[in-house]
Image (cartoon, rainbow, N blue to C red; front, top):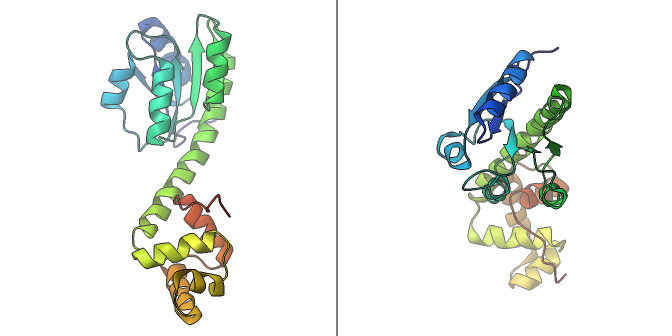
Length: 211
């Protein structure tokens, strides 16, 4: 099997030391890197969110649960796809986890290959999520260089308004809006209007729902 070097780290969070050791051996046997944690808090204290990877997460643990951690990671926008494992067969919990974006939900005991297949799929997804997260951070950094007026113009561009409409909305000349849009394109690193809109939306500039 192909080595997992460079594909990210497989993170295992489970309060059962035996399960952690078993999964760790399994993951290392196919050339993948692994980190293990015995609780959600230990993970939060020690894990570096900048590294790409996937999370093999027990649902039920003392203290904070796996679902609690899933919610926390989503709020922090950590690009870490989650594979839940559980020994309780809680269907409602599995549905809840999947609706919140979990990649898979596997019941214990599981076959090694079932988990390994899920991990490989999660690492592929992790690479995609990591790239999107980096692009989003870059877009936000570019947005931070805009002046308040440029941000105002950009929001109206995202709304789909033409230069003349933006000028009327802001009480200025159409030529002035053209100048703002030119600066926006340069600062955002966009080579077309659609690219500018995509970057703005990626950075969090949303269209006005009233339009």
